Length: 346
Image (cartoon, helix red, strand yellow):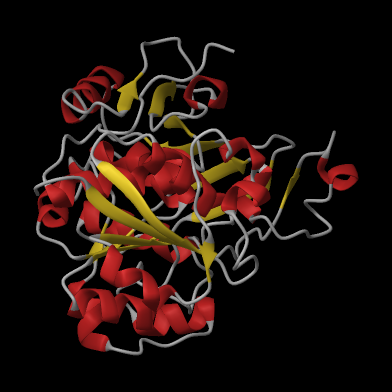
């Protein structure tokens, strides 16, 4: 594409949206053309987020449809149910649409209805959507104009289990996922559980057995394994701003040496996925503000179990960073452009 890619962000003042704004502003091949927000339209975005005053001078618009003619790619960081009509308009105009919400993640409309209370407005449009787990579906993303960006928990889990499942190296019937997320995963709107006095110095599970990311996790793992997989998934809220650590328990069906070799070979050429050395543990501190996923493998030979730890920044690899990685792939740009695999030292 000649010149810089013109990008727009819908829902730019939420946590996912503002992370997109920050990263796109620093992208060497992108011009951030337009931003919109229903909550703050008419305001300068740097007034809502003063950290942007050094370089971003954009006014928040109200109508997302008005952004399209100024964009080659549109990112939507919206609650579920709000992206479908906008996506159709973009696809009809041959504008790449990358949805950070849940509207296009699930293939099965009944599951979408059961977990999100919505329906597919255009079934043919949903068939065009590509699931944007960058490292796994890269070839499909290259041809896509509608990309469903994965959820944050599903990203951490899918990357952790992909090598073992695709090679049939674990028991698919006994997968237990214990995930912990920073408070930004709950969004910018205030709730009692994310109120500072409620979450500070606390640590608790929530939505055990009923989190909306469950069907997305099961869908991805079923694709990898070639069979239907059900998991036990329990998320927890960490009293930190950013990060997800998923600890996954499964029954071994191979040797530790074979599993380590499988993971090393699968991710050998991936710039954003690192398989840690024996004895190292994935830690959210070491991926903060980066588009990296760190995976560590551990073995309980007494119990015959593989324990996988997977760490990502939920706002970057779990949202905005992966969305930009998908844009880079779809547009034939360097995949790492505008993104870093390196976390701050402290």
